[in-house]
View 1 (spheres, rainbow, N blue to C red):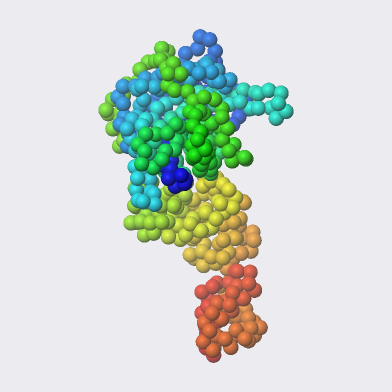
View 2 (cartoon, helix red, strand yellow):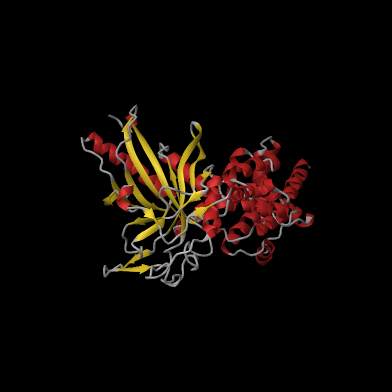
Length: 479
């Protein structure tokens, strides 16, 4: 059978670190980085005799995420012990939630080539993160860093509703966007704040029974996840076509080789021997508590997109792209307040800013300048202090050296030439040096004017006022 005769079934388990100031069961800081084992205490190091105390902010953030993803919020919940041993999990069990999660039965809507599609969310529960192993490059052993141990996580488990790598990417980007907007996680994938486990199986089209699934663990980049989905789907199809059987197993994705490798047999729930954590009290939530969070929920991406189209008159495509990132959306709003020209700000974001982000391979949250500085750049262009072409140079400089645009312009001598005498002198010089273009224009070739203006801009290093140049060239050419 051909590959197109198979259907890929995908479910995701997304782990997102919460942006609380302290860990889930102790008062250690959650701040990323720091010298190894400096953000830990006897509680998160699991010393004998220590007792955990649940951070209330973790519950609030989880409920917030549940409301934003259309989940039902449980009024009664609890914490459970999930028993398994890893070298970077000091207790040899993880405090998580099993049969009474905080949030259930939600959904996230994504756009697909066939229109909108709802991806169901089975549950969102809270749990603690493990530490980290740093492997010695010379093979002498591994070092344990427990700074991350006890950092609060929410795990967002989807139903197996995803059918392609494109849907997986759309779902993850939508989820990331929502979590950023409600400010429960910074979602910095490069720091491990957002990671996904991918459960994948294949079946022949028309079959109703799921195939045997594999799980790919702890991937933290969209590119890696998309590549891994494509590879694993093809691997399973090839295996079935060759007469083999897919084994339920846990896999590791290797980004360099572009292949998956077996880590261990896949555990089921019974393998973890869940039981209620005896050191933590049950979680009781009132209706008023939930409604207060719902009432104070920040504006979500879909709402902002609609508002940008109505208030700012942005095209749907531009509004969709910008609101997909809270950081770009905040940049647009902040800059627009300064310059009162949201369309111009949108154009800068859609063109040069996006291009530079791609070239530098950085995320929007790593843009070094402020929204106010971008707004000031647009003001300087609108006032005619600099041309758009100089504006592009200023923006590039702002990425390297995020100073006020006016300072960058002054330092580089980029102020636009708007003196009539100076511009007239340049125009006459360009005309005298380009007799053929003058003749072409007079013969009806309008493109010649663009060439002449371009020569003048080149001569002034982009500093001439383009409006004045056009006007003066036309006046001279009519003589």
